[in-house]
Length: 168
View (cartoon, rainbow, N blue to C red):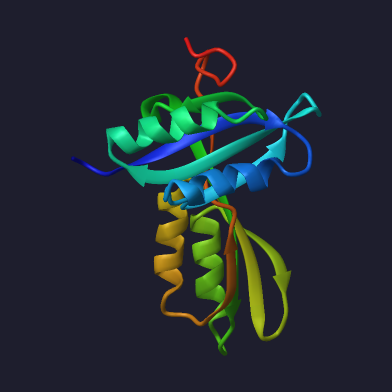
């Protein structure tokens, strides 16, 4: 069977312990979480989670089935990757060598990134977009010393009328 990336969106109760119960379920069932993002929704009593994992059809179905069993999970949807917009945020700090700033600035402009901090020895950049865009930016930066980096992981939103509350 083919192993594919799956993006699962959930609406969950916004209170303490929910994340622990969900991550414990994944651990008990040996499901891997590649990425997890959580944030409050337009309804402050609910949070939205985006979980990225990998698996064949059976494993993806099991993830959804097991999540449905949790009391604090109000809605679960395996997102159709052809009907969603996926974005991720990354911040990266690059060590600056003498004369390296102009080339780094050209890349920042080309990738539509933003400088968030600049010092004589380093530059910190934020970039948002599809994970492939962020990976391409990192590939360009591979010739520089990356001092530190953090990524949010992908989050997804349906296109048009395709959304978590309305699966049509």
